[in-house]
Image (cartoon, rainbow, N blue to C red; front, side, top):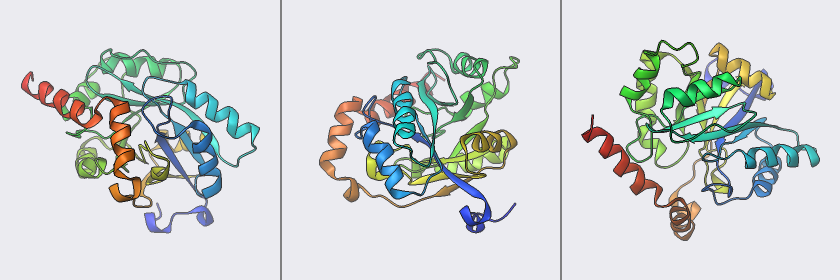
Length: 256
């Protein structure tokens, strides 16, 4: 495979941001603003709206992009809240029940032909799957229970802390690596991307299944760029995402 620095549209590679949140859940940008922003920037071939336990925004984005004849494709996604942590589900047609064991959520996604990615794994500052939970999936005897990929680069400021852990654990599992912004703010879209051979949503799907994706950092966004007041408002909207994530992770470790 070509080195990451050699990959780009001129070499037949597309770019995708497959983990974006909107105002349908705890994001701060509307669906309309997100698709307009992506079209204006012109840097992405595929995006996935992956709101928490919600699929409405993804469908709205697909309809708007088609109506406005935008030159990128939309993947229907959800970030599922499982009992063990978050699960990124892509290429869905219907919602996946939340607050059930992660193995049940993974089975439900695969039953409808979707893909399962472990997002921001082992992050202490978000509701993430631990190494133990990931291993439990690998140990499952259910043929429907497996990961299709791992989020090796999460573009959030918090995600940067755990990205090294994700890369290290994937030396053991060798899953397809994805890069995603996990954007909750419009300016954050594209802070991390997945590079893949081709340019369509189907090309991306095939690349994940074949393990030929490349996770890459995109533009850098700081707390200053986002703005303190915006961050405070988003935290209020999410019910204290950071604090809640730390408490849940601590509780899981104590009960281990």
